[in-house]
Length: 147
Figure 1 (cartoon, rainbow, N blue to C red):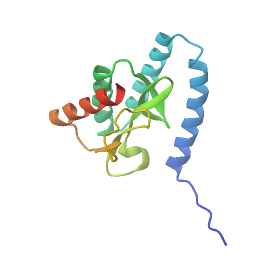
Figure 2: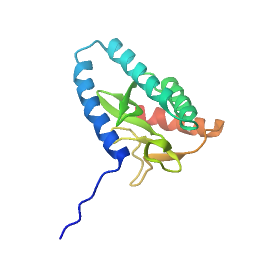
Figure 3: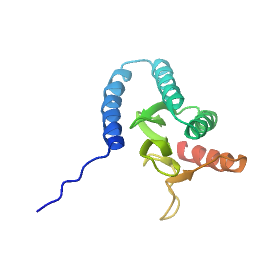
């Protein structure tokens, strides 16, 4: 007898968001890069505004950090979370702790990120606060990943 695995409400919401994002991506593909960027920026800022603290403050700092260190990345959402991409693919994203009711948020990188270093490298970081040293560290990772 096999056991059925149920999805949490948060997982179902993320799947719904991903389906809507695919539809939006098809629509944005027909627009100018400037229009697509403006729409993505508005979408990400709206998602950030919906977040509870401290996720909201972390997302605002990360959005500013990515925008400053990799201005060619296009803001978008990814499973309903703030993300930044290039060539239509997500490069990095912020998964707020509140999204899945966990104890810390994560700033992660997808497979298109240029982070390959040896045979093992980190692709995400737990984030509970962002000090100046943390921001400097992540800025370097963002620049490398987006290069």
